[in-house]
Image (cartoon, rainbow, N blue to C red; front, side, top):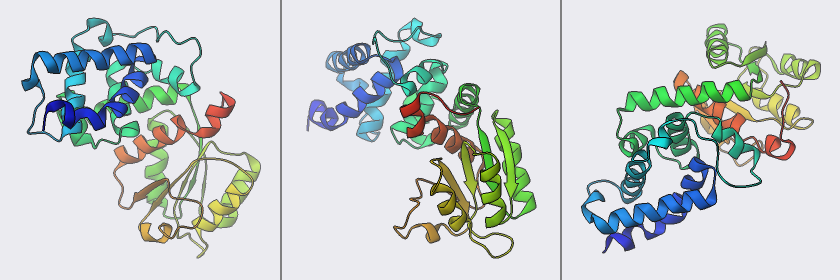
Length: 269
């Protein structure tokens, strides 16, 4: 099978990534064309020892990095009208933006992202944390924590504050969670399932979502309880014990791609 046949199925996704990275459809497509030209000129640049999608994104990265202007803050693409997310992406430093897009949009693992960017896996973690901090500067959020274990609640509070957000409150029961939301609607909810008085964090989230549209990240030792097909769908689900870096990345992802912000172009501070 030729290189063209191998990379063909991945080109639409590469175009999506290129547009997100550059902020412009025209500029993104030009980079994809440059990738194809580079592969024609040097077929060996496509590393067959890597998964095909990883290999083609790796070639893209080499082309991207060969243009010195891409290592600094750019002025955005040439589109006249851009979505809220596109404008937010332009405000993120280029290297963290690459890591964020590869993991959050393109679905690569941190290990695959390290191969694509030709960096150590630990550096990918650093880049994702930088992206999270820069996103937090744009989207400082009020976060409600629904968690009955004090030490875990303290850990979650610390990591939320560490990436620039505010903890609106910590609720230990269904009743406390609903009361907190009634006082001040949060921007995002971090929720456990089993709560202090035997009540259900899932029930609390269902009640909250009946009156408020807000992204929810479930953090639980019982992830199978959310894999039933019932609403709310577990778009963001973390198993205990959790990796703080994973939770930080999911908070940034949930806030950045919250469809509500796409519709309104703004959010509560």
